[in-house]
Image (cartoon, rainbow, N blue to C red; front, side):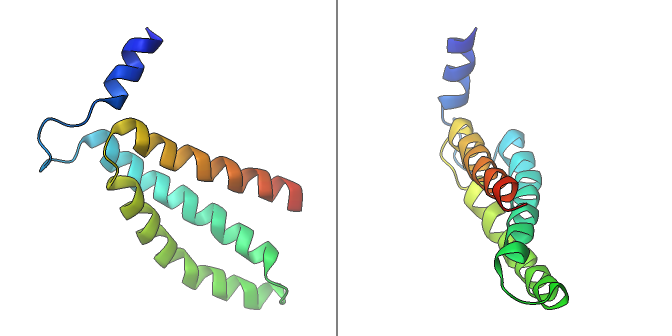
Length: 100
């Protein structure tokens, strides 16, 4: 079962012109989650008052969401799209856990 799922996720789309629903949904919500996690991490890292770092991180959020969504959706297979979401999310969550 795991091998069948891996093969299905690792197989590229037959028609390169059509984006799969899996990649579209994953890129929208995955990009949103990634941008909010990195926005929170940025607010912790910047050595300013919380009000100033909040404004900077909110301005960063829109750009980060667009970049993350584009980066995830332009993946070649579903597995690569899933890994492009899971790996940065895990790294950012661990960094937030360490800093908090």
